[in-house]
Length: 129
Figure 1 (cartoon, rainbow, N blue to C red):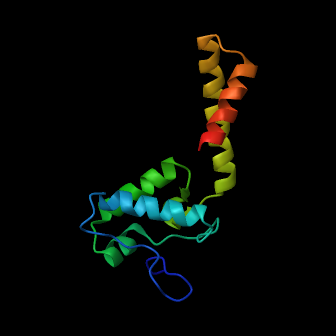
Figure 2 (figure 1 turned 90 degrees about the vertical axis):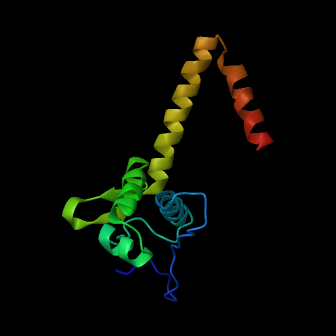
Figure 3 (figure 1 turned 135 degrees about the horizontal axis):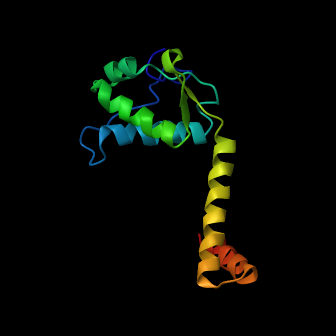
C-alpha cells in the first residue's frame, strides 16, 4: 500500500519541512485527524514504517515514533508482522471520556464538592466552548 492516498491518488499525508512541528508529530496529527474524520475507517491497514518513511523521505525511526504514539493513544493497533491498522475510535473515545469523568469525580471529592455543583461546572464548561 502506498503512503496513504485518497480515491484520486492524492497523498493524504504531507510533511512540511519548514514547520516548527516535528515530522513525527505531523504524521501523528494527520493520521489521528484522518481517523476521527472518517477518512480512514476502522480496520484500514496502514503502510509499513519503512514504506511510509520512504514515501515521505523520512527516517524509519520518525514514522515508528508516530505509530508508537498513535498506538499509545489507541488510534491504531499494531499486530506485529501483520501490520498496523486503524482502531475502533468510538469505543476508544468513550473509554477516555469515562476515565476523565472518573478522575473529575475523584478530584471533586477531594475538594469537597458535591454532584450537583460538579454537574453545574460541567454544563458551564460545555456552554463556554
